[in-house]
Image (tube, rainbow, N blue to C red; front, side, top):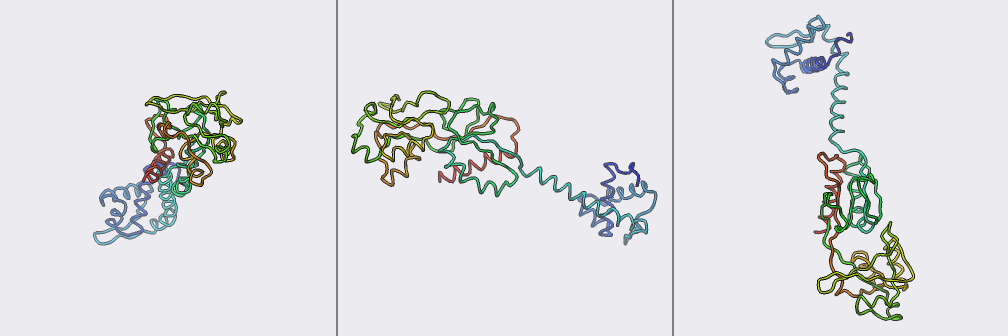
Length: 307
């Protein structure tokens, strides 16, 4: 064949010819291809006109290959099958999410919503890579090149789409029994001024975070001081376990230590609730399939944990 025969329409004619040659029946071939017998006959006739030779002998009862038709069938059948397989594979790859999803996540939220997700997500979407940054800094998603973030509700920009992942949270002051026996127990948040506190600093901020409490349905802040300032709450909490001072962290983070008796909760009547964790991402008209797969998976994990 010359290059002039390799047009888009020729693939349809060759495919029709191969289907008829395989089944030696126009009706069965038409059913296999999902077309009418008359359309199939027109395609084969068009191919015969292009090559200038009869390829099929047909009458009302049977269909057979001519010598020229058999030679062509043997040559083009593997190529047509390979092209058909290539089209199917391309459609499957398009339907299956693939690519990188860049995620910014608060450290505590990672244990709740990302770690349980990693293995099942990879099994379901082997061609998607999750590029995860664990950091408590409140970054600009677009400027930072992130597709999505998991953070607490009070630091989510209004122009982001936000999906709640869990209930409201509380931060609670805690200390080791040894520290309380040595230094006494604060009875009111303002008593913290006379205690050694393990301060935490938001990443990117110079001054430590002021601890927040509620009294008479109004929030107030307490500036604390002590021997350690850290930007990683887990590290500060461990310092409290070691008896260094009083720490302030979320219920989820302190729970294992409280249950084990390593820490004692303090000032709980003044510990108010605030919006919990949300999955957030920039609004977009068309969402990339890998990001959609990630969002659906995180929502599924959060629902399972709630149940």
